Amino acid sequence: MEATKKSFGEVDFLHGSILKALIIFAIPVLVSNIFQQLYNTADTMIVGNFLGDNSLAAIGSCTAIFDLLIGFAMGIGNGMSIVTSRCYGSGDEELLKKSVAGSLVIWLVSSAVITIIAVLGIYPLLQLLNTPIDIIDEAYSYIIIISLFIAVMFAYNLCASMMRAIGNSVMPLVFLVVSSVFNIGLDILFITQFNMGIAGAAWATVIAQGCSVILCVVYVLKKTPMLVPERRHFNVGKELYMELLGQGMSMGFMSSIVSVGSVTLQYGINGLGKLVIAGHTTARKIYMFFNMPFIAVAVAASTFVGQNKGANQPKRIRECLRICYIYDFVMAGIITVIIYFVAPFLVKLVSGSDSAVVLENGAMYLRVVGPFYAVLGVLIQSRNALQGIGKKIVPLISSVIECVGKIIFVIALIPRFQYMAVIFCEPVIWCVMTAQLLYSLYTNPYIKEAKNSLV
Image (cartoon, one colour):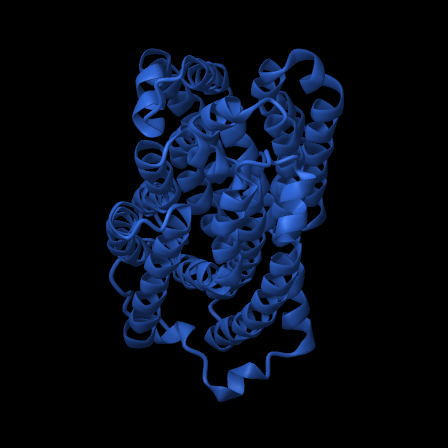
């Protein structure tokens, strides 16, 4: 690939300071993830404050299904972008454009298949999950709209992932900020003025996400020509298609397996009552906000590893991981202290509830999970690094561990220990997964060869 002028926001991961590059790339991703989370948290806050605990529980009861749908679509997009980042790192612009063309074809087919399956299976799945009868129809009115427009959610993630693959994390943030503000405005309008209930929150999410897709496409067409394939590039070739499908489906199924475990866990939570559902839903929204700093660095590390794998620079990859792990423990310590003091206030702020069950359970969940953010950070970054160097099976195994662990908790522990088992479910599983991933990563020959070398 000939040297070209970088567009606004692109970061050079192949040369210079690793820490500086990670920080510059991760900050926009962090802010972007916060605004992404605002899509759901705005729904939760507005629904909880204007429609009450029943409607909040209705959204909470289908959260795991939402994560299953969106997680699979996002996993495919993120996986394909790893291939694109390796093409970029290798300097082959023709191959890069072919990877984008192949990703577009896979996006169209995958979106259609996911939508059909989701629409046919949503209501039976809500029934299977033991969703309380007095909120099941309201929950369905929310999740069916999301299901019908899954292609919109997929499209934004694909566009953003492709831009990040070439080192640009700024512009996806800009577009997401605009759409997030739009989403909050539509939430308030549809729920408080048009009386559309939680279906209004779903429509607000879809419309706002559609705006971000339009903005991304316009920018890519005008400012990043290396991501715009021509007709000839759609002759992708079997080998590249298989690599895109393998990496994309690996991450898609990884997300799905994790979500199947979460859906199973949701079954156990739904059996504990509406107020417990409402408290857990609120705590999970807050948990996701505190998880954003770890995800942002993991996304940066994933792009870094992909590009440097393409450029065959394993020493830089190993040093990147060392920096990331130190960051995980420092950030987890800071977050744990913050959560200890502000957890009850945050639960009340987000839920709008005065119920002691909602407030106490939500705060307890956050305080227990806080110290385990360090483990979760190492887990995410190790898994992303393995995917970045082209490993597909090991991350899938970690997802199977998570799924099986959640099933065991639902069958054996939640009936006996109730919500306390729900709280400890994921932290215990994270520890097992992290041990497996670290072993796999540091026994990988590509990573081992840089062990005794300096960057």
